[in-house]
Length: 121
Image (tube, rainbow, N blue to C red):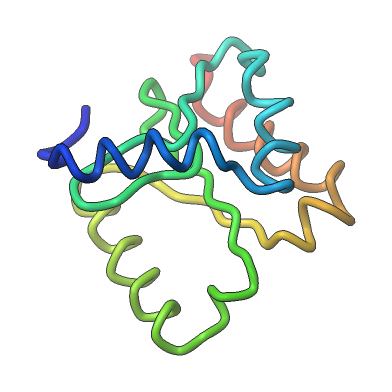
């Protein structure tokens, strides 16, 4: 479930849970109620990374990208991370801070769409 996350990654995840951003807190308010019956973890360690939100049952990561994700260096790191997650069977959806703050209903519908796709028929 943690794919070899080191103790330092676990410590970092714990720090991030204490200092969540405004947009992470906003989305967490929805995810913590277990939408459509799916449990999410916040700031979940996987390998050398900390996922903003993670649903183990669906192997789904939800990431919220702040402005620093627009830098070339961070864009490359994000690609490496996305590829790694894909290799271990975890899908990822990403939203920007702006989307969470200004298009919250669209973000929630996108999340719910992913969750409904994971429900048995």
